[in-house]
Image (cartoon, rainbow, N blue to C red; front, top):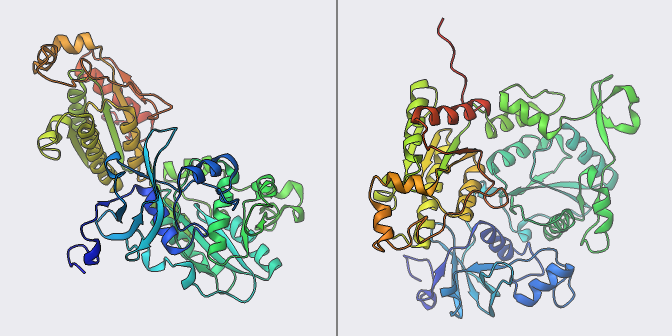
Length: 507
């Protein structure tokens, strides 16, 4: 075995690849046996059958495609080492099929997996367990697979259902939706309020773009692999639970509705509360507004420890990490406005501000990259990664690259939104005005054919689209506009959004 790779000598010459976030999670669950009966990534026929009818080609029920996307250059190999983001080898894929996704035209590899070592990346790894590592109770086991903390209502419902079944409780925080650490800590904090012997086992299961039925079915399959005999659904999922009853591997239990009894100040089933004493839980919107303002979360709604984790995961907007991402043609004025915004925020004080200008990033962070589409995408992803880290730690990242491709801007939005807030500003100055300015002489060189793949001339600029990258929060045309006015419009947007406090008039 080689010390450098941790691979057996017979495998060290194989090509290696780091899958994306969802596929890494799938890989961990496949290796752990949590996706039983799957033993590897699906091929084209199985994938088509799953999408069409929720079953594998052999008729086995399975709710979602589990596939591995790879660059085309890797499709000619028979074996491939799959590694984590730090380059640690996790498994070898024995390629049974290389196929092209008919919807995205991207390439996929399918085949069984050989484990190399257990994954060791991600939060709370000491709590993560393979299904075969858990102690199985003799009686029923109720799984609570959730992406949200358990508030007083959900805790009461879980206790009631567990008591009715005579079951112990297995809480499965589903990681990958953002703020994973807070979710796990919030569930650990309320474990004592669940029946004795309750366990908390984090599971890497990022959200997927599937309907409610398939999402609930996937949770049921994972819960069943961990030994659960029942899965607790939300009280609003009664109809969904009925639809999947025949195909679910374990029964999906829907609790009866609960509410807060304002008369005796306890949570209990609605059927036991006088109608004029029913007080509903806070809606997600109401909870979000409290957190955005920094107001306390009421104790009747959730335990204090959970409230503290919610506040840590979603600080008040004026303290929350934020990325302001400018995009536009060369010469549109985005760098000038970005620098002005950074100066204005620094002068106001109270926030840590970092400016990631496109040209500066090119010289330092992305030195050596070309202007091919692949390298330009990589440049934007690097900017997005740095911006997300600044945002994660409560700072303001101001980015001003051209960022011509909507799909890549969408990637940056996802990276940042997982840890804070994201604002997209489209500096939509027309090409004619940008070319007239041509401060660096780039357009003249592009027109002369000296610069290939130049955005706006020989390569397209894709304007922000709500259906692709979330759309622009602000559109600026700097033609005839003074820089101070443009900066003021962006500041007004940030003040209205609550990220920046209004300037107080002098006394």
